[in-house]
Image (cartoon, rainbow, N blue to C red; front, side, top):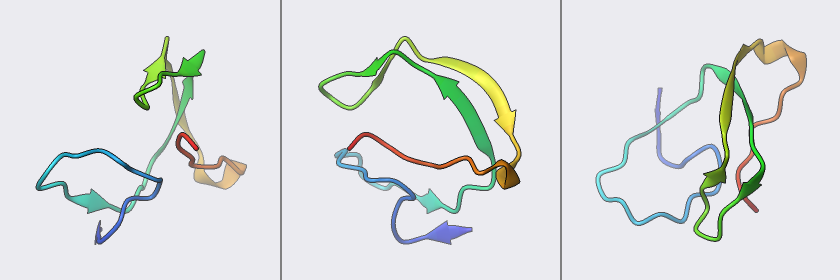
Length: 60
């Protein structure tokens, strides 16, 4: 499960981060991204099936 790079773009500065292969897909609703890359007014909606075409993405 351990991989050398994250599944989405990451520009954080934390040290000793361990990246893993995503195995669950969560549905999260949010209003916007903040200037420092955090979700604004995020709300967890639940887990989704991988086969439903859900994309995994981050802030571009």
